[in-house]
Length: 190
Image (tube, rainbow, N blue to C red; front, side):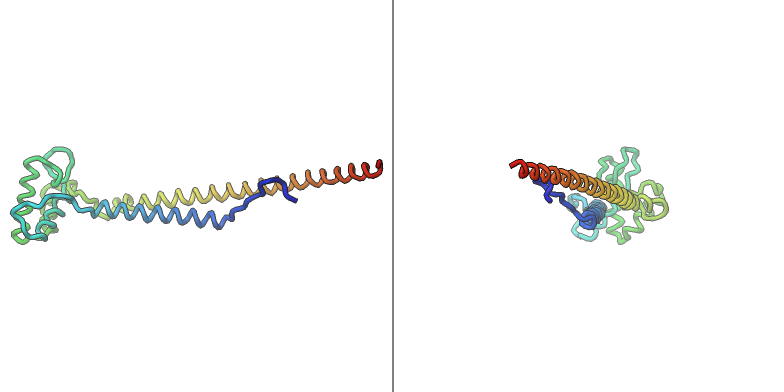
């Protein structure tokens, strides 16, 4: 027997779980894409006029964006820093690249001289691994928590709907019996 204009609509738990998992996976993939794009984004530095070799220009750009200036200004990469020290470091890097030195050698010499705190890219080793892994771990924990909460909510909703359906069917059965009794009495009177 219909209980009203709106019948109980059910959505399977599997459908909700599948949608939730796909959303979590999409968020994880998007976070990796954004992180990778931010780390590999090439800077928009104008190429110096005296530098025609594109490999030297790209190597210089890599150096300027991966080490901090030691000048004492705010902690900025050599590319961004506007002090005279940064300009001198840039000229030194350019000259060493033109002389044929590799990016790694120049960077290693710079970091050996001024210290590893001037490396702008966090190396993927030791405790830094935790910093790289934390976004994924947090998403998994939040996803698991949301999954458990949604599952319990759906179970409670189903239990409440079953209870409501039973009470509606009991009331309607009693109402049907009363109507039948009244109908019999009416027939007897007429």
